[in-house]
Length: 124
Image (tube, rainbow, N blue to C red):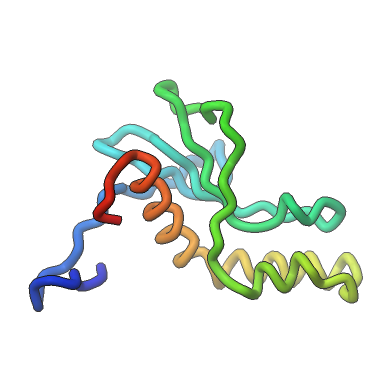
């Protein structure tokens, strides 16, 4: 947990719990025990716009609500990968998989901040 900006010694309490669902990629974000969003990584050498970290909002049944997933800006390294036209497919995919691992924690944090904003919590 990160210290709050206000009172020394107090820690910020996360608004969302995180859970893994074996039937879905990524991490499910829960609010009061109910799934509200998924933070996930996707990569596609042929369609690079589909590469990166995304936040998908869930409906009341826990399924994607139909809105397009929102890209999470996590690292300049992801943007560099999208623009890299020199790597061959195997090298590009290896780099994408490495970036998924090393940017997972900041992606979850970014997903929680964006979700809080979308749900109207301006403390994020």
